[in-house]
Amino acid sequence: GQNIDQPTEMTATEGAIVQINCTYQTSGFNGLFWYQQHAGEAPTFLSYNVLDGLEEKGRFSSFLSRSKGYSYLLLKELQMKDSASYLCAVGDSNYQLIWGAGTKLIIKP
Amino acid sequence: IAGITQAPTSQILAAGRRMTLRCTQDMRHNAMYWYRQDLGLGLRLIHYSNTAGTTGKGEVPDGYSVSRANTDDFPLTLASAVPSQTSVYFCASSDSPSAGGADTQYFGPGTRLTVL
Image 1 (tube, rainbow over the protein chains, first blue to last red):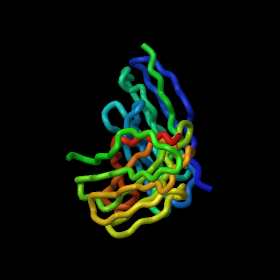
Image 2: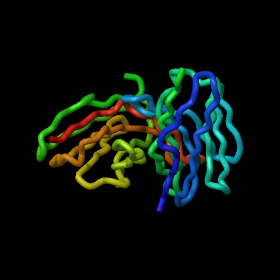
Image 3: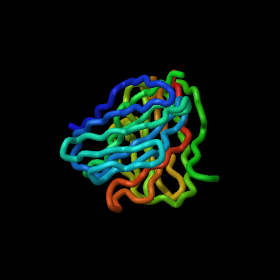
């Protein structure tokens, strides 16, 4: 079957760095997405990886290793507004997105 | 309109009633999707449409139907609502489902549905 695994919850301190991991097993691979979802709101797009390596976008970076079925989202210089759920999703062989349950990130002052 | 809109924002519905959730996008995206999101579970695909006039079943299609008469609108209908359909429903759209990989999906604000 298809499966996306990510930690349920993480806690970090304002100003610090946090890494959220995602492992996947899917039928085919057509890209890996990270989305941010604040409580009570819709998911919003953060990053996309289709080739191995690191993609950097401001304070956020995303890494992909296709051979290991592994990705991480790195958030630097954490701010209180980064408190949200972070969703990992993989495009399968039908180009549909398979979603993880999300990681709730709690930022403490 | 900018992006994707959904209506209603929230709804309480008696079991057995029929309900249509509306979704409209103005980005001229080819593909549209309906998801449900339940606590502790990832987004689950209910139905999708790769282009106007076509629809397909997702992971959890039972009890739901969709239509795609034009590019902009993609309504989701619950023919006879049951309490297990209590959830948050998100509509999404993307430009193309197969151009160089899966395409970025953009989400509407969601509809919070409670079936009693």
